[in-house]
Length: 238
Image 1 (cartoon, one colour):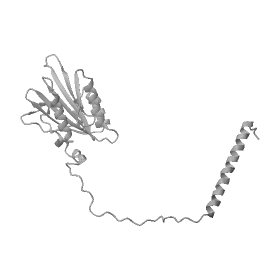
Image 2 (cartoon, one colour):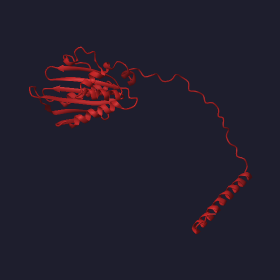
Image 3 (tube, helix red, strand yellow):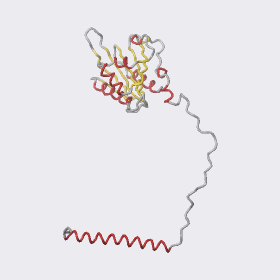
Image 4 (cartoon, one colour):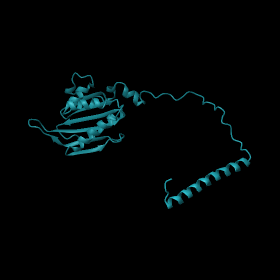
Protein backbone atom coordinates (compact mmCIF):
# COMPACT_ATOMS: atom_id res chain seq x y z
CA UNK A 1 0.00 0.00 0.00
CA UNK A 2 1.29 3.41 -0.86
CA UNK A 3 2.41 5.59 2.01
CA UNK A 4 0.04 8.46 2.70
CA UNK A 5 1.66 11.67 4.02
CA UNK A 6 0.64 12.79 7.48
CA UNK A 7 -1.27 15.80 6.16
CA UNK A 8 -3.03 13.57 3.67
CA UNK A 9 -4.20 11.20 6.35
CA UNK A 10 -6.02 14.01 8.13
CA UNK A 11 -7.59 15.09 4.88
CA UNK A 12 -8.85 11.58 4.17
CA UNK A 13 -10.30 11.36 7.66
CA UNK A 14 -12.30 14.58 7.30
CA UNK A 15 -13.41 13.60 3.81
CA UNK A 16 -14.70 10.26 5.05
CA UNK A 17 -16.49 11.97 7.92
CA UNK A 18 -18.10 14.41 5.51
CA UNK A 19 -19.35 11.58 3.31
CA UNK A 20 -20.83 9.75 6.32
CA UNK A 21 -22.49 12.98 7.41
CA UNK A 22 -24.14 13.40 4.02
CA UNK A 23 -25.40 9.80 4.09
CA UNK A 24 -26.74 10.18 7.61
CA UNK A 25 -28.45 13.45 6.75
CA UNK A 26 -30.10 11.90 3.71
CA UNK A 27 -31.43 8.98 5.74
CA UNK A 28 -32.84 11.33 8.34
CA UNK A 29 -34.54 13.32 5.62
CA UNK A 30 -36.26 10.20 4.28
CA UNK A 31 -37.44 9.28 7.77
CA UNK A 32 -38.91 12.74 8.39
CA UNK A 33 -40.63 12.76 5.00
CA UNK A 34 -42.12 9.31 5.68
CA UNK A 35 -43.86 10.57 8.83
CA UNK A 36 -45.57 13.50 7.03
CA UNK A 37 -49.09 13.49 5.62
CA UNK A 38 -49.13 13.08 1.82
CA UNK A 39 -49.41 16.39 -0.08
CA UNK A 40 -52.14 16.72 -2.67
CA UNK A 41 -50.49 17.75 -6.00
CA UNK A 42 -52.35 19.16 -9.02
CA UNK A 43 -52.90 16.69 -11.86
CA UNK A 44 -50.40 16.81 -14.71
CA UNK A 45 -53.13 17.00 -17.33
CA UNK A 46 -54.78 20.42 -17.75
CA UNK A 47 -58.02 21.33 -19.52
CA UNK A 48 -57.65 22.39 -23.14
CA UNK A 49 -57.87 26.17 -23.53
CA UNK A 50 -60.34 27.57 -26.02
CA UNK A 51 -58.79 28.96 -29.19
CA UNK A 52 -59.26 32.62 -29.98
CA UNK A 53 -62.00 33.24 -32.49
CA UNK A 54 -61.78 35.34 -35.64
CA UNK A 55 -59.38 35.45 -38.54
CA UNK A 56 -55.64 36.10 -38.18
CA UNK A 57 -54.01 39.40 -39.11
CA UNK A 58 -54.08 40.43 -42.74
CA UNK A 59 -50.79 39.90 -44.60
CA UNK A 60 -48.78 43.01 -45.32
CA UNK A 61 -49.41 44.64 -48.66
CA UNK A 62 -46.58 44.83 -51.18
CA UNK A 63 -46.26 48.53 -50.42
CA UNK A 64 -45.58 47.80 -46.74
CA UNK A 65 -43.65 44.52 -47.05
CA UNK A 66 -40.08 45.54 -47.89
CA UNK A 67 -39.07 41.98 -48.81
CA UNK A 68 -41.80 41.78 -51.43
CA UNK A 69 -40.67 45.08 -52.96
CA UNK A 70 -36.96 44.24 -53.11
CA UNK A 71 -37.63 40.76 -54.54
CA UNK A 72 -39.64 42.32 -57.38
CA UNK A 73 -38.37 44.55 -60.16
CA UNK A 74 -35.55 46.40 -58.44
CA UNK A 75 -35.57 49.09 -61.14
CA UNK A 76 -38.99 50.28 -59.93
CA UNK A 77 -37.42 51.30 -56.62
CA UNK A 78 -34.99 53.70 -58.25
CA UNK A 79 -35.71 57.42 -58.27
CA UNK A 80 -37.18 58.65 -61.53
CA UNK A 81 -35.35 60.97 -63.89
CA UNK A 82 -36.52 64.52 -63.13
CA UNK A 83 -38.57 66.36 -65.71
CA UNK A 84 -36.32 68.34 -68.03
CA UNK A 85 -33.23 66.25 -67.27
CA UNK A 86 -31.46 64.26 -69.98
CA UNK A 87 -30.80 60.55 -69.73
CA UNK A 88 -27.14 59.90 -68.97
CA UNK A 89 -25.12 59.22 -72.11
CA UNK A 90 -23.25 56.31 -70.52
CA UNK A 91 -26.58 54.50 -70.00
CA UNK A 92 -27.79 54.80 -73.58
CA UNK A 93 -29.13 51.43 -74.74
CA UNK A 94 -29.19 50.01 -71.21
CA UNK A 95 -32.42 48.58 -69.80
CA UNK A 96 -31.76 49.65 -66.23
CA UNK A 97 -29.81 46.54 -65.21
CA UNK A 98 -26.07 46.24 -64.51
CA UNK A 99 -24.66 42.76 -64.98
CA UNK A 100 -21.87 41.57 -62.71
CA UNK A 101 -19.24 42.12 -65.43
CA UNK A 102 -20.46 45.64 -66.27
CA UNK A 103 -20.61 46.55 -62.60
CA UNK A 104 -17.08 45.23 -62.04
CA UNK A 105 -15.80 47.22 -65.04
CA UNK A 106 -16.60 50.46 -63.22
CA UNK A 107 -13.80 49.72 -60.74
CA UNK A 108 -10.08 50.36 -61.22
CA UNK A 109 -9.32 46.62 -61.08
CA UNK A 110 -12.28 44.86 -62.77
CA UNK A 111 -10.84 41.35 -62.48
CA UNK A 112 -10.25 41.64 -58.75
CA UNK A 113 -13.69 43.21 -58.24
CA UNK A 114 -15.38 40.49 -60.28
CA UNK A 115 -13.91 37.83 -57.99
CA UNK A 116 -14.98 39.77 -54.92
CA UNK A 117 -18.54 40.08 -56.23
CA UNK A 118 -18.72 36.32 -56.78
CA UNK A 119 -17.52 35.67 -53.23
CA UNK A 120 -19.98 38.27 -51.90
CA UNK A 121 -22.90 36.47 -53.60
CA UNK A 122 -23.76 39.30 -55.97
CA UNK A 123 -27.38 38.90 -57.12
CA UNK A 124 -28.14 41.88 -59.37
CA UNK A 125 -27.81 45.65 -59.72
CA UNK A 126 -30.21 48.28 -61.06
CA UNK A 127 -29.11 51.71 -62.27
CA UNK A 128 -30.54 55.04 -63.35
CA UNK A 129 -28.75 58.23 -64.35
CA UNK A 130 -29.41 61.68 -65.75
CA UNK A 131 -27.75 64.97 -66.57
CA UNK A 132 -29.04 68.36 -65.42
CA UNK A 133 -27.97 70.84 -68.11
CA UNK A 134 -24.27 71.52 -67.85
CA UNK A 135 -24.37 71.70 -64.05
CA UNK A 136 -24.03 68.11 -62.90
CA UNK A 137 -24.80 64.47 -63.65
CA UNK A 138 -26.27 61.82 -61.36
CA UNK A 139 -25.94 58.03 -61.21
CA UNK A 140 -27.83 55.89 -58.69
CA UNK A 141 -27.22 52.18 -58.19
CA UNK A 142 -29.07 49.61 -56.12
CA UNK A 143 -26.85 46.57 -55.64
CA UNK A 144 -28.47 43.44 -54.22
CA UNK A 145 -26.75 40.42 -52.67
CA UNK A 146 -28.03 36.97 -51.68
CA UNK A 147 -26.38 37.19 -48.25
CA UNK A 148 -26.50 33.50 -47.43
CA UNK A 149 -23.03 33.54 -45.88
CA UNK A 150 -22.25 37.21 -45.26
CA UNK A 151 -23.70 40.70 -44.89
CA UNK A 152 -22.32 41.89 -48.22
CA UNK A 153 -24.63 44.91 -48.55
CA UNK A 154 -23.26 46.28 -45.28
CA UNK A 155 -19.65 45.54 -46.28
CA UNK A 156 -20.11 47.21 -49.68
CA UNK A 157 -21.52 50.37 -48.12
CA UNK A 158 -18.79 50.49 -45.47
CA UNK A 159 -16.06 50.03 -48.08
CA UNK A 160 -17.35 52.92 -50.17
CA UNK A 161 -17.58 55.09 -47.08
CA UNK A 162 -13.99 54.29 -46.14
CA UNK A 163 -12.74 55.32 -49.58
CA UNK A 164 -14.81 58.52 -49.52
CA UNK A 165 -13.49 59.54 -46.11
CA UNK A 166 -9.87 59.14 -47.23
CA UNK A 167 -10.24 61.69 -50.01
CA UNK A 168 -8.81 65.12 -49.05
CA UNK A 169 -11.20 68.04 -48.73
CA UNK A 170 -14.27 65.94 -47.92
CA UNK A 171 -17.27 66.93 -45.81
CA UNK A 172 -19.79 64.30 -44.67
CA UNK A 173 -23.16 64.00 -42.93
CA UNK A 174 -25.31 61.14 -41.67
CA UNK A 175 -28.35 60.27 -43.78
CA UNK A 176 -31.45 60.41 -41.52
CA UNK A 177 -33.25 57.12 -41.02
CA UNK A 178 -30.40 54.94 -42.32
CA UNK A 179 -28.39 54.14 -39.22
CA UNK A 180 -24.82 54.39 -40.53
CA UNK A 181 -25.55 55.77 -44.02
CA UNK A 182 -23.55 58.85 -44.98
CA UNK A 183 -23.38 61.48 -47.72
CA UNK A 184 -20.13 63.13 -48.86
CA UNK A 185 -19.20 66.29 -50.72
CA UNK A 186 -15.66 66.53 -52.11
CA UNK A 187 -14.67 70.19 -52.09
CA UNK A 188 -11.43 69.59 -53.99
CA UNK A 189 -11.91 68.75 -57.68
CA UNK A 190 -10.27 65.94 -59.61
CA UNK A 191 -7.88 67.47 -62.15
CA UNK A 192 -6.33 65.91 -65.25
CA UNK A 193 -4.40 67.61 -68.06
CA UNK A 194 -6.72 68.54 -70.91
CA UNK A 195 -9.88 68.27 -68.79
CA UNK A 196 -11.85 70.75 -66.74
CA UNK A 197 -11.78 70.28 -62.95
CA UNK A 198 -14.44 67.79 -61.85
CA UNK A 199 -16.18 68.08 -58.49
CA UNK A 200 -17.94 65.14 -56.88
CA UNK A 201 -20.36 64.05 -54.20
CA UNK A 202 -21.55 60.59 -53.17
CA UNK A 203 -23.85 58.80 -50.73
CA UNK A 204 -23.78 55.25 -49.43
CA UNK A 205 -26.25 53.35 -47.25
CA UNK A 206 -27.88 49.92 -47.06
CA UNK A 207 -31.16 48.33 -46.10
CA UNK A 208 -31.53 44.58 -45.82
CA UNK A 209 -29.74 42.95 -48.75
CA UNK A 210 -29.57 46.10 -50.91
CA UNK A 211 -26.73 48.63 -50.96
CA UNK A 212 -27.42 52.12 -52.32
CA UNK A 213 -24.76 54.07 -54.22
CA UNK A 214 -25.24 57.63 -55.45
CA UNK A 215 -22.60 59.46 -57.48
CA UNK A 216 -22.87 63.12 -58.51
CA UNK A 217 -20.32 64.99 -60.65
CA UNK A 218 -20.20 68.59 -61.90
CA UNK A 219 -17.99 71.43 -63.03
CA UNK A 220 -18.62 73.26 -59.75
CA UNK A 221 -18.91 72.18 -56.09
CA UNK A 222 -21.96 69.99 -55.45
CA UNK A 223 -24.25 71.51 -52.77
CA UNK A 224 -24.91 69.48 -49.63
CA UNK A 225 -28.65 69.87 -50.25
CA UNK A 226 -28.38 68.13 -53.63
CA UNK A 227 -26.71 64.93 -52.43
CA UNK A 228 -28.70 64.75 -49.18
CA UNK A 229 -32.02 65.17 -50.97
CA UNK A 230 -31.19 62.40 -53.42
CA UNK A 231 -30.01 60.06 -50.66
CA UNK A 232 -33.02 60.59 -48.41
CA UNK A 233 -35.59 60.21 -51.18
CA UNK A 234 -33.91 57.09 -52.55
CA UNK A 235 -33.68 55.38 -49.17
CA UNK A 236 -37.36 56.11 -48.51
CA UNK A 237 -38.19 53.85 -51.47
CA UNK A 238 -36.35 50.82 -50.02
